[in-house]
Length: 59
Image 1 (spheres, rainbow, N blue to C red):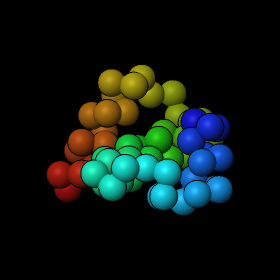
Image 2: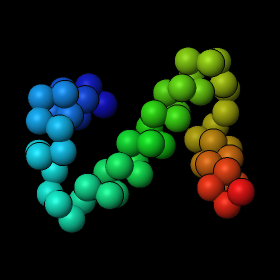
Image 3: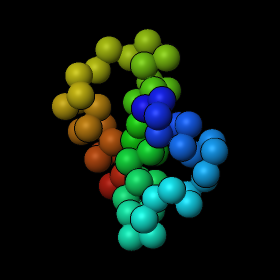
Image 4: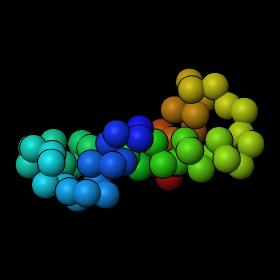
């Protein structure tokens, strides 16, 4: 999300609506985890990745 990254670098959370900040934060965490696993060479499908995230969240 290059354009979102640029907004975050320049404006922090000020560019987002107050009501959307928590949702954005949760989505950003998922995106960061996806990127981390991609860099590590993970070959999971999006569905398998989503199941792993849900299991980790419940643990």
